[in-house]
Length: 348
Image (cartoon, rainbow, N blue to C red):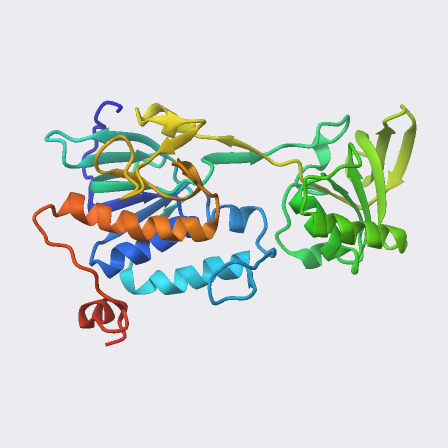
């Protein structure tokens, strides 16, 4: 653990949740049902984590009772669900320091914006940590990044009617190639004929290619073509060394992420392969009073699913309650029958 942070007026709270992705948002809900208040902190400027940053329009099919749900829709629904609990969200602030306060039962948490918390417990729901997309490494690419070269899709309609080159061989690349092929001219570029994406997506891509509705090149992007202001195309290099120019208006590059734990790695918590080791009873880390849920944690049998993260948040809430109020007897209540929980939800 780092040394204590000096701050004039820390914000006193029962819990600080680090990370406002789906698991962090649902952690607010599970804590709220138990009558525990929390503050959320996230380095991104909007809640939602990877769902909002990387694939807001991508459909999700494995959320219980929702046969299909857009990623941003899921975040919006979670925001609505936690509204009764009034959690303050500190967005665009990265947690830089975490220290156990004198006495050992509370924590001082400091952010890049100078915000300091005096918290009874901490839940780390930081996903893969801080992350940046892997950039398109090609001559002449830099002037077009953020204008004609993109690493995420915020609004699919922005690319309708465009000549697109989509780079990559994973799920994001294939998903967007399939989604946009009906509304744009799509060329898919991947360094090899094998893909990391779901087999069904690859099969569908091959169908579109055979029908002439999508073009695939097994190649690398060698050079970006343009006048420094307007992108005109890409120069591709095939495996045999041949060069090919492809005209395009926009490039979508999906090469994955550079996941970095950042400051989390310096907090003295036990790690395994860049993930926080937790128990499976209450999802507590190696430091009592600090918990971890979602993709940031690891344990035997861990599966990186949003569904799993929701389960972890439920059990972590009871672990937090036991840490904060060890003298309080715990018992399970149900939202359908508990007047106390219904009052907290504002439905009584």
